[in-house]
Every structure is written in C-alpha cells, then in structure tokens.
Image (cartoon, rainbow, N blue to C red; front, side, top):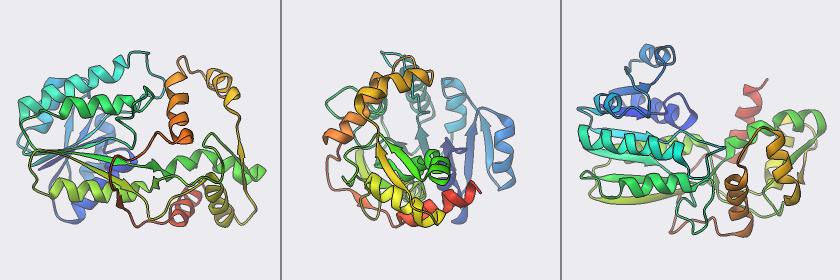
Length: 285
C-alpha cells in the first residue's frame, strides 16, 4: 500500500495516477471525505486525516510500503513559520508511530538556501526527516511551469504577462508537475537506504520571455512579458491581503539574484514547456 498526502493537488494526483496505472494499491489521505470520493471511484482506499493530526496520520500511514509527504503551501506565513512547524511535527510523529517501509517527501529547489525565505518551510521539513529510522528520499523539483496558469487571462485579454522573475531573458530551472509526479512514483517504488536528495528540473530551462512566447503560441496572439519593479512588490502583496510578504519577496530575490539553486546535478524531466502551456490554456477554455 502507498499512502499519498496532497492527492487532490497536481503533483499528488499525477503520482497517484502513475501508481494506479502500474496496478499499485493507493491510499488517498484527505481531510474532506467528499474530496476522496473521486479517488475511491478510481480504486483507492481513502483515509481521513488532517495534516496537523498525528494520530489520524499514523493510522493513515500504517501498514504502508511507502508514504508520500506534501507539506501544504503557506504563502503568507507567520514570521516564525509556526503553521508549517506544527504540521511538520505531526507528520514526523505519525511516521515514527506508523513506521512505513520508506518515505518520499516533496521539497523544492532552494529549500536549504542560506537566506530565510518562503521556501525555508520546506527546509524545515527536510531537517525534521533527516534522522527517521526508515529510508527517506527528498525530491526537490524546480519552479513549476503550471504557476503560469494565473497569467493566462491577462495574456489572452491584454497580450501581456507581469513577471516578478527578472531579468526577463534569464532562463531558470522549471519543471512540469507531470514530471514531478512520475519521478515521485519511481522514487516511491525504489528500495533505497538511508537519506537521499534527488533534484529535478524540466527538459530545458525557461525564462519569462519563453513563458510569454509559449502563451502566444497557445493563444494564437502576440504575448510579451513585463517586469514588475521590486519596489512595487510589497505594496502589491499587501493590497492582495498578505500580512507578511517578506518571505515571498526573499524567495523571488533568490531566483533573481541566483542564490536559489540546486546543490548537485539535477535529473531531467521530459515534458516540454509547450505541452504544459497548451494544456493550461485548454483547461481554461
């Protein structure tokens, strides 16, 4: 049995579909029974557990060959990242109690960067898993190409996308969530020893200009990227309702300044930028 947290998201869903296609038994860990019904219809077991509930998670992880961990994203965290800290503590306690054969945890490029930023929460998860008494694989993917979905309306209507990633011609590691899901499935099925880190990027590196060009091809109209000056970021984030935008700004600084980087040699995915963008545009009609 393979227990999957975050199964209702893009990566968890891709992972589950890959395992099911291979005939593997999957347990969907969800906090809302209604969200589990679609996965039950696909043949999954469904376990109800909140990610802050160590006892519930322990039951969900019991008798599992493998467990996939996905820390829920907190985009506007408290200054001490207390929200994620509580969830991480519950996940760790549940794994110690349930003792699955192995664990794959989704982290990210830059999780252990030397500057405190939004992705530090995933660095905290990595640290909490380092001394567990079962094999742990940390999967660190690059920036998700699917983040571009938010820009499709402006590309369609104005022929522009605003970019916080700068300069616009700098290509960065990006990856499709389908590649992440497939990689997670392969790692979950592998028998390994101890603690290891696997880094993953897409078939090629991508700049904001590349993203705009791909949107233009998918939409059949010219699309250009426009850089948003850094001195406007804080006001924009506060206007959107954020209370603590500094971690998010520092994360973006990390990509723009170059200190958000892989630590070793990353594996490569196979899904192209155009494949992802065409699917995103089709999904939005």
